[in-house]
Image (cartoon, rainbow, N blue to C red):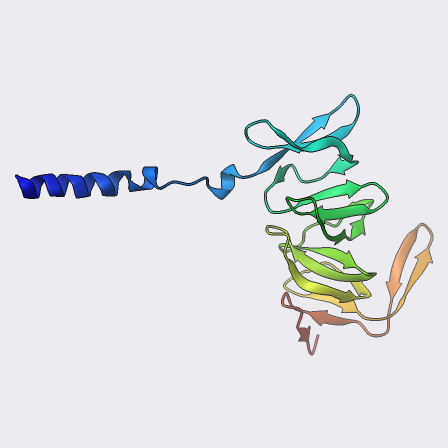
Length: 177
């Protein structure tokens, strides 16, 4: 009888361990964008409905579900990535009058006038900003240059350089391309 009680106790502890030992999962620890369409303002709330980032703090919030980082339009600064404490992580490269598009899981970022790349899921910098010009990744490589000039052709700007080269997603120079 005693062994049966011990076996039952072990079985129940194994069965209920996941329930008793549960902590809030990362998926419960996110913020959701809120919008005031009358005043055209944006902010973020937690899952309980508490306003965490007040409306009107940012001109536009581009990230609807704020997990690790959010892309926002900060007055006078442009597009930036912020962390949960609202620290600016880096500037976002502007493309087509908005924040850069994600390509192969990466998007372009700016720091001190140089371009690098960040991971679209985590917001972590993957390749430090060190290029004067840098295109999005395509087929695992990106065309970059450390020098050159911007030429205006009609209403478009074009990057011109005699020293283009390709990098992989770790930032290593690819030879022979």
